[in-house]
Length: 183
Image (cartoon, rainbow, N blue to C red; front, side, top):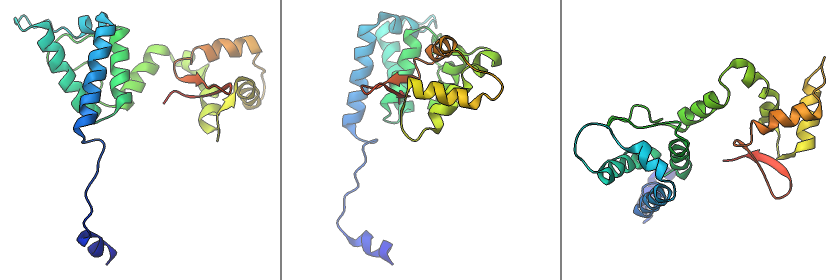
């Protein structure tokens, strides 16, 4: 009944993800990153043998990634970060190596950072504590929480700091000296 009533009201639909301004901002951000880091352009160049210009292949890739991003700056930033670090290199116009979702990007980043199960297991307690926390924790609070999870062993401070350093791209320090996930 309320749905029928609300349909009669003169509301306009407003969506940020479909806005031309968001698309323009994403394209501007893409171009700024490509200009700031020429390695991104190098990793986008397609080796197809066609005589299409570098600029043309970069713009085709930009349109492809902007479509995938669906208005998400985080998605675009992470794709460009992977290109800048040469973790992905586009070699053809089908873009099969490019992740198509944030889940695939995070999976790729974790697989690159932790190539073995043992290397990932070293940081699982830190990740568990930070994910379960209701608010951002300080480094000391994370340390004590991790040690409270370890029943039969004790993790020395130096070892904890070394393990925490492996997560520096995922956990960022806030101005109040607490840590949170970067997004």
